[in-house]
Image 1 (tube, one colour):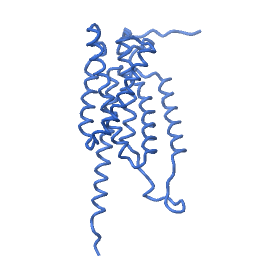
Image 2 (cartoon, rainbow, N blue to C red):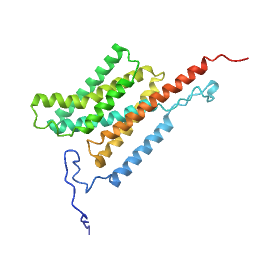
Image 3 (cartoon, rainbow, N blue to C red):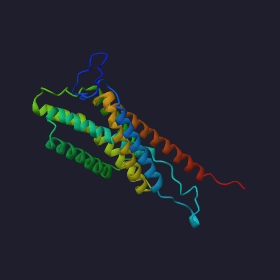
Image 4 (cartoon, rainbow, N blue to C red):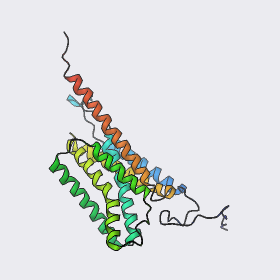
Length: 251
C-alpha cells in the first residue's frame, strides 16, 4: 500500500518565476539528476569515441596536430541555451504559452543572429571586450528585472520593452560568436565545441528548479564569464607563441 509522507512545513506556492507545483521545495529531483548524469556521461563517451585524431606524418601523433579545448566557443554554446530558455519563458508569461508565441520567439532569436552576422561582416569586429561588457550588462538587467515587470503596461510599451530586455543579450552573444568563429582556423572543431556546449546548457536548464527562471540567468553569466576567460587566455597564449617565434636563434 502506498503511503503519502506529509511535508514538515508549509509548501512554497508556485509562482511565475518558480512554477514547479509538483516540487515541495526548490530542489533538483533525484530522478532528474540521474538523467542528467546519464546523458552527460553518454555525451562525453560519444565525444571521446568520435573526436578526430590528427597526427603528423605516417599517422604518428604530434604536438602540432593536437588542439586544446576551445573554451570560449564551448561556453558560448552553453550560455546561449540558457538565454534562449529565458526568452521563451518571459514571452510565454507576457503573451501566453502558445505555439504562435514560441514561433515568434524563435523567429526573433534567428533575426538577432542574422543581424549579429551582418554587423560582424560590415564592421569587421576586432575587439570583443565591448560586446562582452554589453552582454554582461544586459544579462544583469534580465536578472534584476522581475518576470512580471511588464504585466499591465500599455501593449506597445510592453512589447517594445520586453523584446529589448530579452533579445539584447542574444544580439551581443551572436556578435561574439560570429567574430570568434570567423577567426578560428578549424571551423569543424569550433562548431563541434559549440554544439557540445549547447548540450551542457540544455542540462543546466534544470537549475531553474533550484534558482527559478529569473536567477537561472546567473548560470548563463557564469558560462559567459568562463567564455571570456577562455578567449583572453587563448589570446595571451597566442601572443606568447608569436613573440617566441620572432626571437632570433642564437648561435
